[in-house]
Length: 162
Ligand SMILES: [Cu+2]
Image (tube, rainbow, N blue to C red):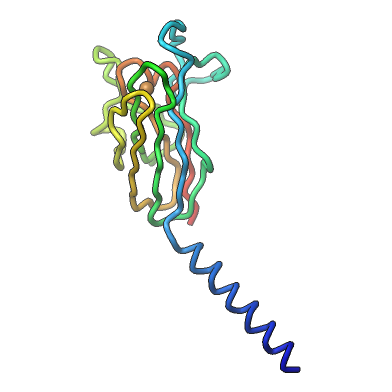
């Protein structure tokens, strides 16, 4: 009887620890990658374009995991490129089907109109940075907004659950 009470108390303590961990900030590992500056960039791969074949992309963003609970989310961002500056911007999508507003003559997303929630800007090759933001449930896109990179496939979808 005592033993059972003891192990039940331990199990309860373990559950409380897990509940505590679930409320702490979620951490997402983000890799900004490319196939090298000597690889010709493939464009036409903007988020929201119908019938995308992302396997053609010569650069991209990988988020692990690509989902988090609402609240504080920490993005640990690494520029895995050998020779190109990249960055990561968190964009909230009010309507996840809409394309991101684009400034064609600057070849980049209009950050002010696109739902910018924060960024780790312009990391040198091999450099790392971190961003913690308070995110509400919904659909997000992580993008790199160095000119030309977004349409070359440098984005990934990210979901925040309630
Ligand atoms: Cu980039």
